Amino acid sequence: MLSIRNLSKTFGGVKAVQDVSIDIKQGSIHSVIGPNGAGKTTLFNLITGVYTPTSGQIQFRDENVAGKSPDELARRGMNRTFQNLQVCMNMSAIENVMVGAHLRLNQSLIAGLLRLPAVRRADSACRDEAAELMQFVGVGKYLDYAASQMPYGALKRLEIARALAARPQILLLDEPAAGLNHTETGEIEALIRKVADSGVTVVLVEHDMKLVMNLSNHITVLDYGKKLAEGTPAEVRANPDVIAAYLGASV
Image (cartoon, rainbow, N blue to C red; front, side):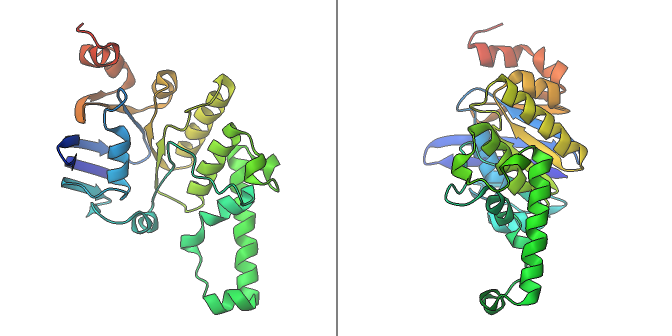
């Protein structure tokens, strides 16, 4: 579904990502792990159009999408969440989710200002869908809450609901369990599995190794911007190079 070939990104003299190649299969949960500074988030930013690659290709459904903008990629079926929450705190929870559907709504400015019947019907349908997504991710009880009133763990799931509102074929999650307690991490793990079971391919960057090992079909390990290893959770767990990179010592 997603094929990355010889992808590199240089910032001045810093090689943040170096000649990385990865294949991500449709319907899988594919994790990208590595020590801090390994290039994981830079890789995500390259895939999702936040950065333009210095070199290399990104093939999404047989189309080279390297350098395309995030909104173009969202229209093609790729969406993401961020390591740091990107929630509009001055909006309600359900309005945040409705924002995620804006690319699918075809409304003119004049029709919106006049509140024509077609616009009202579309808004109502969008709200109903957003409410269903909030139930799907487990935050349905916060339907009419302001986002600023929600606990941090619920906001992490709300951001996933907003990403799902765009109806992505592939969803990239950047550290969805960061800052969560044990119970909340378990809820996120169950949600990611639920998203994958619904038919959405998931690419995951995460530091919680228990979550990664429990969820992943395949794992790619980065270190200093290069691909260090890849394989099944069992293969990666037993790889001496991976152990050395995490422990900082030869094995």
